[in-house]
Image 1 (tube, helix red, strand yellow):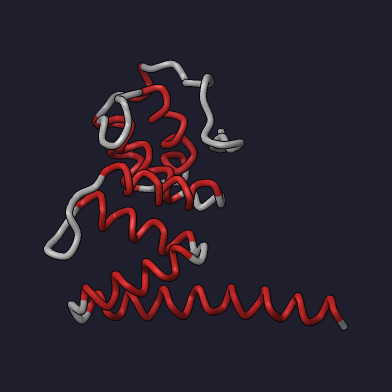
Image 2: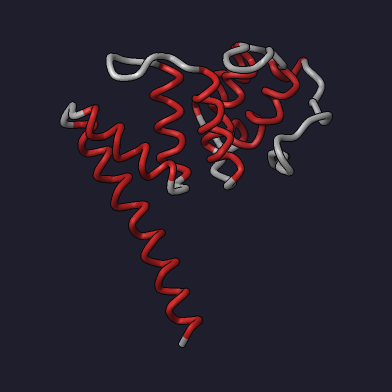
Length: 151
């Protein structure tokens, strides 16, 4: 019985992630950016990697609501990446290649971009090509926390 309760709680929290995320996307389409941001932020802080990427994008791009903050953007992209949400890796590759929120490191950018580039992610392909990441050795000398992205 205890196992069933735990399983239901996990299922409900995962299901709620998708509901909140999808509703926030609808709010974005309706140009209700403040409501969408607040819902994404709540969802991101509850661990939803999709919402973490959206909040990262808010900070990366900046707008009338949010000033650009590359350190915060990188933080949210890292949270999502640590959960194996590889779409976040393309944004991290972009940040390392451009030196936004981190020191420029093309080898590290290549580590983040490689898997999604091979999967056809347009942002990773663009970062890879724009910065000629084939020309840089892979940076194996780092990790954040105990996490290292998947090669």
